[in-house]
Amino acid sequence: MPVRGIGSITRASLNGVLAMERTLQKNGKITLKLGFNANRAIAGAKIVVSDGEKNVLEEGSSLDPAVTWTHQIADLPADKTYTFLLPSANGEPLLKHSEGVYDVVPRDRIKAGPQPQIHAPDPKSWADGDFLKSGTDLELHAD
Image (cartoon, rainbow, N blue to C red; front, side):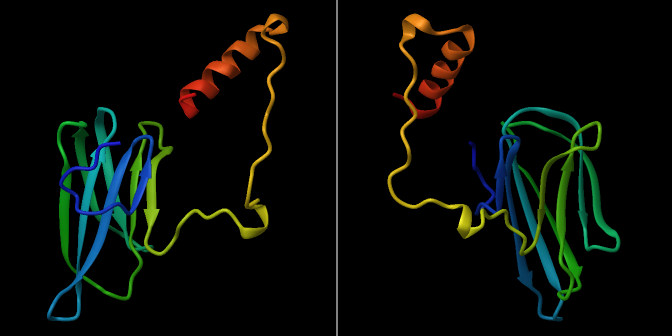
């Protein structure tokens, strides 16, 4: 995943990496600093930043992994929560982040310690799906 020239990682997905950071201004307002590294070309992308009531930025851009997208929005009220949205051409979010909101698996769904081993059947009895499952496992775990 490329991370160049954005300073930090606020949220990442298979589509790209977002940095979103507040800087307090002397007048009590904030500047919202945004940076995005695309993991693939996204032609005709639309980037939207909203404060929950209205959009504070709507910008069209063709995103490319070779080019870092950056933007600063000054003089924003500090008491608002801002959301970055990069939708697909059909409106599905490719990457969305709201300040202070993170995806977390609840503690009761986490099993600490050794994880159960999955044993594959003998390769001589494999069906097509077993070969695919084995290839995916090898690719993900580099065994």
